[in-house]
Length: 494
Image 1: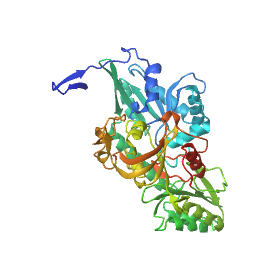
Image 2: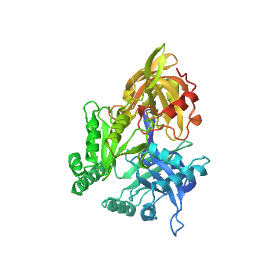
Image 3: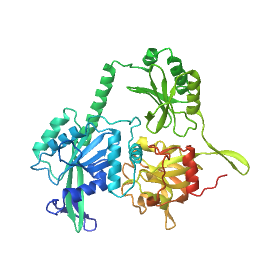
């Protein structure tokens, strides 16, 4: 239930529940458009691939919305004003079967077509790049054959909820989201809540799934330790692997090594950012190189996210891979006649309910949060660092100088009409910056910035082949991107 509170009268008035049908709102032209504009209505961030998807074999059925979640899972969304008297769960299962064979290239084509229908000129490669920027899973290279299903309606009958709960016992990922409308004066208020699974149950189910994956890995015939993998390598590959691994696991590098089913991943211990990814075959070692490294000879078409992969077949090539991984690509310039290294950083500023680009321009900051994965890289932005800000799916919108390191949102103050006030008390467009502010791990973190130049979001600058990354902050050393940004923002080259 929702209540309208009158603080002065100290009273509460219950807001009556309406119905979408009674208010003459329709599934396709209203409810569907609301979700397309704001996927968070379904309880999570989603990357919309397309809507009204009808390319099923030998059937004229249409899927309301096709999307991808932050883990890189395909998500099918079925919308109903009311699920009473429908077979929404069975209909969604048919759609899941139809979509289970879609490839990454297929959905890139679908998203490009969707963007063109909405008036934006985009290629399949543009669509794939945007998708990779959204997905938070570093090893996102393909879709699996088990899409998720989200059913959204203002009401679910017992026969559907019972069926969904039973199907979930077979590890089918089904979610029921209730969208209940209310009228508050002349305004329509939509109350969104996840009915199945409850947050506590979802955490339990995800934990159980991870345990199943680990158990399956242990039962598989593959190696269970990196040392065991090394022992199985051919005499041709083993010295190459040991050479590269010795550098990656040194105290100076300080990386964390982890064995996965398809290779070995290395992350920096300090901030969790990726160092590289190794794979082995009978004749070569494959090494993922940061995209900013120059003069990379590509010996294959395989990619690790946005990172090209080089093939290492002898000790000389192993030494070159180590050089590319360990080199410092700082931009050299001269100030006052003495050389110094400019530390340019890329910052991804994901707009939403927790942060808004107009607020960032007005008060001079960048921010990230709602999880350590997002905020930890932001904390390495030191004062005097130059940053270039990127809006996901739009482009670069600003350049500035860091003036103060990252602090929790509750500690950040701004100037409002000549008075210094906490930003949480300042006028702003982002309505939920204070969410999780009492939790050090999930709190929003804010970095004070002195802007050199900013652009409105609708004038964001992008071009083919530009550098973009899913981390909130990382070194920007990709020379073509830097050169283009310096020219676009009219910066001095000294």
